Length: 216
Image 1 (spheres, rainbow, N blue to C red):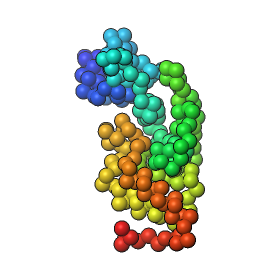
Image 2: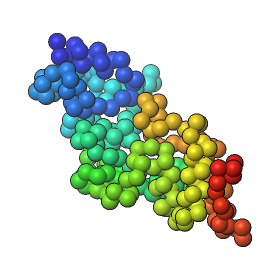
Image 3: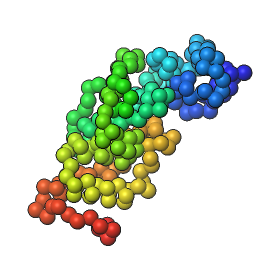
């Protein structure tokens, strides 16, 4: 009964979904869930990525099972412990087009303990961070705040970007939505361009600017 229920739930998910036994606790005991997931992995329906972490892999007609999205893997790892997940400032700035620097390793900030998990040939590092570095973790706003940390934000620049975020909110879904989770930390071109403009304005003779309700 447990294995058929879990199989049904997994098959209703999108290909590429990542999960842990904790995501199925409503179905049965932890022991029965572990056995069911192990059996489904042996049957080839799901794939074991790391200890206690599985995915319902995307399949390429040409290449077979594709590599998992590491953001989704990291999210699943911290989700089972009820912890927060945030990307580091340099990656946020890169995603928003404010820098070309790319991290060689997959590093994430969390309020849990520091640890490293191996996923295939790639390692995921979760680094314990102070609460101030986890503000709005997992949301578009959190990504912007991290980018501001990287470029060196002033109070006026933060207010400007907050206004831009409010203006762009209808175009940018929260990370908690199912579609956004598959692209957890992306942004649209409008906000990226606006943030670049923020960076330019902070260096202009007219800076700082006053931001109010009628600014846009």
